[in-house]
Length: 177
Image (tube, rainbow, N blue to C red; front, side):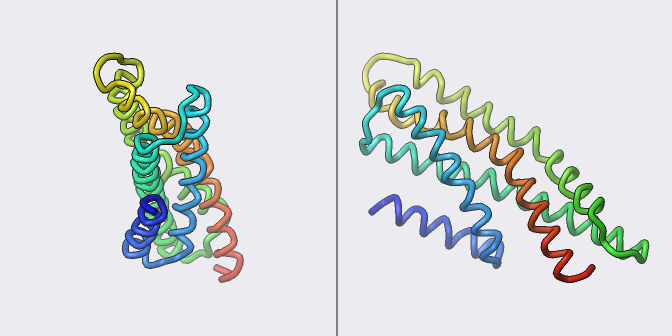
């Protein structure tokens, strides 16, 4: 009950932010990739599903969505700037404009995303490797986050910009701009 409710709240918040269902679906596409990394590490560590693991997966979904939102916002900002340049030069938008916008937007976010992921790793790896009172429960919360952040980072830095290029190409070819 909690996981579907969490996903519904994420969808609602994303829609209120973007006011565009295509962008929401694009961001939601980041969640399965993040969850794959989290589930993979759970399997590797031989952890069973539990309430603590569920809490870790919910936290992972929130952080993965946040990384996707940040990347998408900067891709959109760079695209708007590139379209403005093309308008100022009184020329149509071409494929090199799309490529330049995506590279510019993605490069702006590499360091902040890597800093976010490094902070999560720095905070959660000691919890995963620790022992003592309560460590067993905390490890099951931290494991999905660590595994999921590894896969979500790859998705956010590589796959999301590539999908954005495909979306822009389709939009530009449809509009004839």
